Image 1 (cartoon, rainbow, N blue to C red):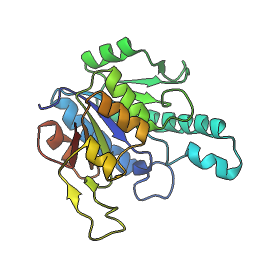
Image 2 (image 1 turned 120 degrees about the vertical axis):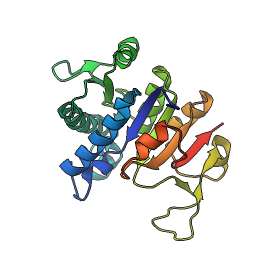
Image 3 (image 1 turned 180 degrees about the horizontal axis):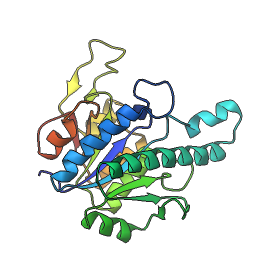
Image 4 (image 1 turned 135 degrees about the horizontal axis):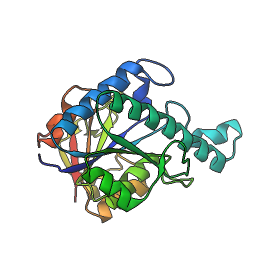
Length: 235
């Protein structure tokens, strides 16, 4: 395996599948199957998942909700997705631990760095929910921070697009894909990969990011074995 320990970042919107809202059980099962393949290879897996399929804090202000309140609502949305993913993984025979940035003891453990690393070493999949527990930080920032804290080898950002392009490929047919690109180039070309806080954290800690299509069967397995899938962002 090219990577011994990975941080997989999944978007909440991706869980909608063909639905307009909520969680698509078919997509959820697909993700569980893909993660199991990698787990069976002996890779240590941590996961951060967004909550955009349920609620986004940045949209709260438009409906008159205080931004801080809205961000906490968004954190709870990520926990709902994390619990759904945890259930799907355990039904597939995997051992998991859900750790939260907000204390909800009856549902999950609070995040403690050493405990998270120990869970990974024991072969458990660790899911990080509720962001970092503070408003104004996205789940991208959570993924970058947690990856650094648990000493992950890479951040794998699973999206519905198969990499980083010169423009939005869903809007611009002439957009071309980058196979490899540096952090500096992403800055200079103003490419939308992650929010700036998350991206800067990865750059300053020399943590590579791979953006890839999580919805294509086998992509995650190929990545951890070293195949060139998606776009690799490095120093």
